Structures are given as structure tokens and as C-alpha cells.
Image (cartoon, rainbow, N blue to C red; front, top):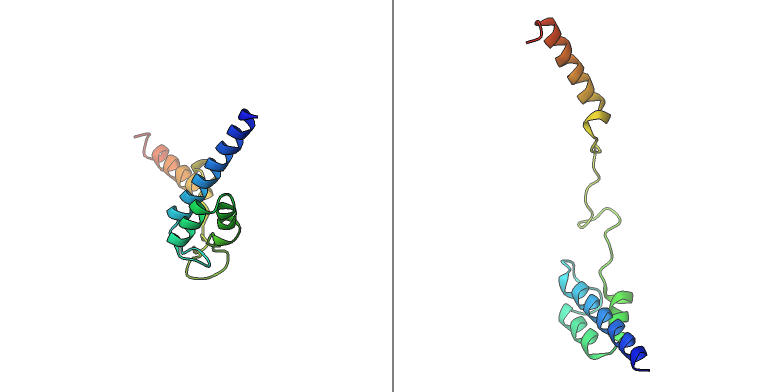
Length: 103
């Protein structure tokens, strides 16, 4: 019985700490309430406050074009051995080096 209560208490503490860290650590404004009100709700309303934070209070991720969305990358990063431009430049340098006498 004591072990079961201890496990439930540990789960509750982890839930509250993760909800508080998520609430207080974000840069974007939370939905529905100010940040301090969410923190008080998480602390003062057992379990329900943390569940409400994760269900309704977290800011939505930026998905569409808008002020919070990052511009899409025009070129993807490639490893040097997968980059055709790098390989062509390398071949050009080697050819020039061979023509100059291997210097």
C-alpha cells in the first residue's frame, strides 16, 4: 500500500515539475491565462492544473506562414562527399595540380 502511494506521489511530482518547467521556460505567450496564473493553477490544483496546462495552456507550435514561423531553407546541408559542387571543385583542383607538375 505504501509503495503504491509512493509511486503515485512520484508520478504527481514529476507531472507538476514538468508542467511548471514547460510553463515557465517558454518564450511564447501561453494561451488563455497569463504565465503566473498558469503556474499558480499547476501548483494549487493537484493533477488537474498540470493536465489543463498540457491540454489547453501550452502555446501552439508555429506551423504556417506567420511571424513565428521560420523561413524554409532554400538549400539543404550536405556532407562534402555527397555535394556535387564540392566534388567538381575537388576534381578541378586535382586536375590543375597534376597539370602544374604535382606541386
